[in-house]
Image (cartoon, rainbow, N blue to C red; front, top):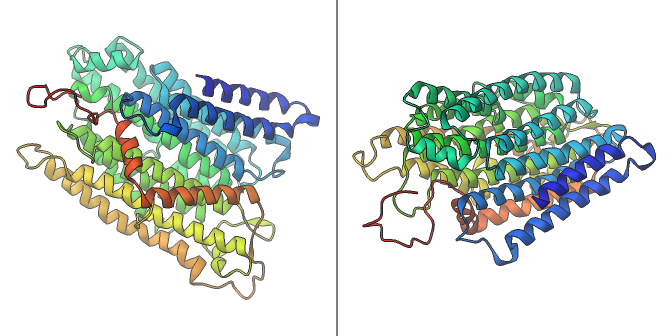
Length: 511
C-alpha cells in the first residue's frame, strides 16, 4: 500500500497548500513528486527491471497492471494541465487528480467490496470537483451538474447491487464470494436474487464505462468541459469500471451459473453500434471523441462476452478477459495522447474544438504543430484499428476471442452467436474508421480558410512530451505486441497459467 499512501498524502498536501496563496504553486511539485515516487516504489515492488513475473498469480498481475496504468495516466494528465490556466484552483485540481489516480489503483488491487466501492467513489468525487473548477471549458457548471446527478444515481444502483452480492455470498472478501457463488451457496436456492445482483452491478458500472443505455451524459459533459478533463473522464472511470466488471461479474458471478453473457452480448452490440454510427455526424472534437469512447466500450464488452461463454481447458492466446485488458491499454494510451495533443493547440486565444480548427495543421510552417498533427493522426489510426499500431492488435484480440470459442457447435453451442458478434464488431470497426479519417483529412488534405489567418500554435511544452510518450508506446505496442499480450494474459482471471504442473489428461478442467 506504499504507492497508494504516497498518492493519498500528496492529495492531502495539495488541498492544504491551496489554502495558503503564498505557497499554492508548490502543489505542482508535490503532485509530480507523488506520482514519480509512487511509480518508483511500484517498480521496486514488481521488479520491473526483470520483466513480468510469469508465475505471479493473476490478481497480483491485475493490480500491478492498473497501478502502472494509473501512474502513467497521472503523468500524462499532469503534463497536459496548462500552468496558470486556473491558478486560483490549481492546488485543488491537482489534489483531485491525485485522488482519481489513487481510486483507479485501489480498484485494480481491491480484495473486498468496500475497497472496490471506495476506489470508484474517489474517482467520481474528484471528477465532480474537477468539472466544476474547470474554467477552460465553455460550460463547466452544466457539465458538472449533469455528471454529478447521473453519477450519484449510478453509484446508488451499484451499491444496491453490492448489498445483494454481500447478502447472497455472506462475505465482503472477493475470494470468499467467488467460492460461495461457485459452490451454489451464492444464490441461496433463488436464482432470481442472483440475477438481480448481477443486473444492478452491471447497470451501475455501465455508467462508468459509458455503455448503452447509460451513455447519454457523455457527449454533453465532454463538450462542456476542457480537453484535459474530457481526457480524464474518457480513461480513468472507464478503466476502473472495466476492472470492477472483471472482478465482480467475470471473477465471481459467472461461477454461479447465471446467463450473464446474454446481457453483455446485447449491451456490446448496442454500445458499439450507437457509438460509431452517431459519431459520423459529429463536428465537435470532444463530442466526436465522446462517441468514440462509447464505441470502444462496446469493443471491450465483446471480449468480456467471449470470456463469459467459454473457458478454455488449455493454454490459448485469445483469452477473452486478456483481450479486453490488452484492448483497454491500447485505448487508454491512444485516447490520452489524442486529448493531450488537442490540449496544446490554440488558434489565437481560443482552444481547438472543432474539425475546422484543425484545417491545414500538418502544413504549418512551424515544427511543433506538424509534430502534433502527425501524432494525432497516429492516435486516430490506432483507435480505428489500422496496422501496425496498438489498436489493431487490440481489435484483433477481441475479435479472435469471440471467434475462437470452440472447434465445433457441439463443443460450444454458443459459437454461432459469438461469430455474429465478431462480424458486427468488424463492421463497426469499418464504420468507425470513417470519422477518424475525417480528423486526419482535416489536418493533411485541407487548407486554412483565407479569412482566418490565425494558425494553430502549440502553447504548452510539457504536454508535447506527454504526446511523444504516448506516440512511442502506441508504436512500440504495435510493432512488438508479444510481451504486452503476455502481461494482459497473465492478469486475466480466466486464463490458464503458462506453466502447467499436472497433466491435462488427468487433471480437472478448472481455472
